[in-house]
Length: 78
Image (cartoon, rainbow, N blue to C red; front, side):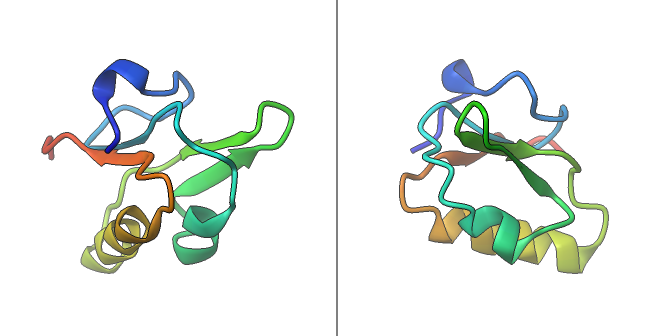
């Protein structure tokens, strides 16, 4: 499960984030390309945009649920 302690510094502030457990599998970006971006040099993805529509939030939640390392977190902030 993602933790705020391991939150990557590139994440845009807000409810959703990626932590240091990310293995750069690219699944989150495939599911929600408007909200996640990879850093191939460092080997991880991070949140570039917090969801601004219901559809985006559903996609980000799908990415969270699908993440193989549970590296996407939701700290409940809106």
